[in-house]
Image 1: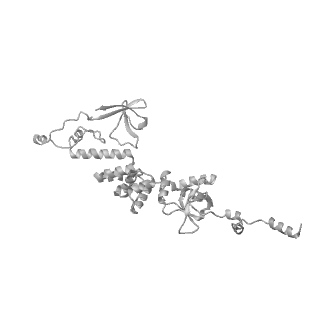
Image 2: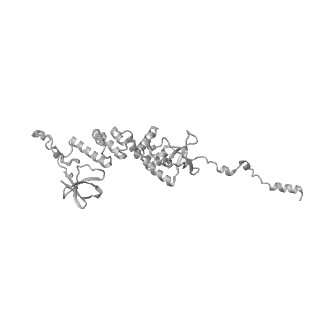
Image 3: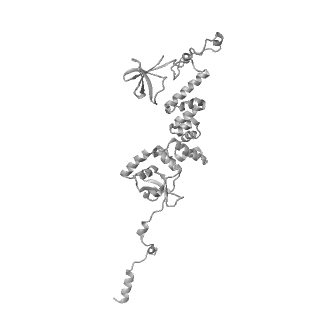
Length: 349
């Protein structure tokens, strides 16, 4: 074989370029190991240093949220200490501090990791995230207090959004938003109970607002008793009492109607309070005919521990679902869970 032929063969044996410029790319494996760009649907969770992560100062949950209590953080911290964070948190790049991140959701896992002295935490980077997304996340987990929901709705309304828009945004009904909007402007006594966390049920607070509009002094006095529980049952009793009182003052109530709190009829309660009236005064207003469909005095007979008893209607129960009872055989009065009571009969006394 000639020298010319050998040279040609060596030329053919050389690696051929693809023509795509791959020769200038360098180490392809090195490129694959580079950090991927952050985006909403991109890479999986990464281990991020805790000291590069900040909590969102505008997150919907506030400092007094029960989930942020020292006891609650210690509980989740113990599990993280033993097993690590099994569900990655979500963060976004902090536009005001390049190289740092803000938490979208997962503040409790973040705090628990710090409690457990961890240095990193698994996290998804999701830059397509807003405050409404945070509210939705926490609503689905039932981690927002009524106060926090109200504050968020108030901020959205201040931006010019309609209630219907807000409802659609957070996946709730318009009625849900309307009910919370009422709580943005509460009377002082009710606002104090709501803001302190004493009253957490939105329905209860709205019922109190309705009662306050007609009887502000009575509702304020009722709330002034710190031992008074704010439950749906207790507020219902309050409203019934106020309605009865107003009807009595207007003269519209049958004098034989039993007062829910005193157990006496209006006629019985009025004995001895007024002096005798002359015949002309008595004749000015004809007595109303008794309504045959109304009980003059209701007696509710029950059975408790296989013993006959009756409900005491004029004593305030200690809590919702409880009542005062009186045994028929020995007259003993006691508190009982209504779940342990069997209704026997409703009689007229």
